[in-house]
Amino acid sequence: MEVARERNTNILTMSDVEKLGIEKTIEIALELAWKDTDMVYMSFDIDSIDCGFVPGTGWPEPGGFLPREALQLVAGVAAEGICGMELVEVSPPYDQSEITALMGTRVIVEVLGAMTVSGSLGKHRKHIDKPVEIPAGEFEGSRWSNID
Image 1: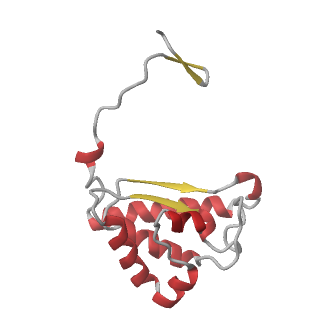
Image 2: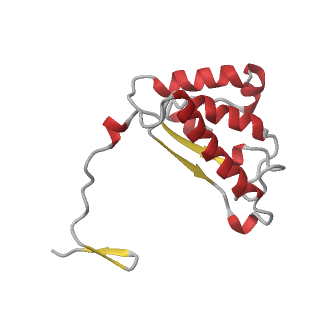
């Protein structure tokens, strides 16, 4: 939290979310995310969901979102259109019943579904469909080697 405050990062705690409700939280998140930008990238940390529902993470935390709250939140943000997303902190070695992986899959499906229904899927194509420069060299095994 200290680093986030030093960097002037906006923080909504679970207490804030409980007081505001999910709909107002979505509204605030969208307002902050879209301020002065053309695109929003979503990073969803699976351990923001209560550890009773997603035990297969490296940092299980009690008191997180209920699954339905998390799904409502990601759908609400994604419906406005995002340019990409990542889902992080699913740890298969700790996910004995694969319930965490299942929830992670559900988050991704919820995001894609919300974007499809809202018509925002592909909305940012003009910004992200640009040629990608391949670094000079060749890929050998798991490393790039320079040709120079």
